[in-house]
Amino acid sequence: MSKNFLIAAYKKLQARLGRYRLSRAEEDALNDAFCRLWASDYHLAGEAEGERLLYQSMRRRQISLWRSRQRHPHTSLKDEQIAEPPPETETDEIYQQIWEVIQAQLTPLQQDILKRHDINDETYSGIAEELGMQEAAVRMQLSRARKKIREYYKRLKG
Image (tube, rainbow, N blue to C red):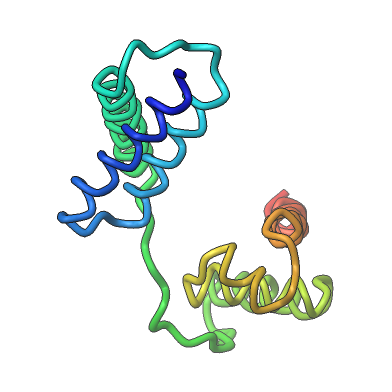
């Protein structure tokens, strides 16, 4: 059975890579590769072929993630405190206006998710678990919040 070869290869590769203490992204890449191969109609000839395909898929996924991080670097704001900026300069006035939009236009839920994700650098799954929501719902609320802020900012600049 092709699926049995894939399961055996997945467990073997997971055990071998587990010695290196994989990051969450690397584990996700391995799981993603397994799921894609599981859903495909590809018929494996043996466990070695399954392991090779999983490893190649995982490596490609990691390269893709690395390229994405190079194009769009992420800076953590985990230790930053949210403070109202002093309205002394033009930039500070814009920040003050956007801060007011966040407080006035966003729902309390959207404000909470925005602060948790963008300021406290929490993951979508962590936020969803704490709020008792689906991860997709958290993403949707954050997307809507950012859209409101962007629309206001465009009107402000336009």
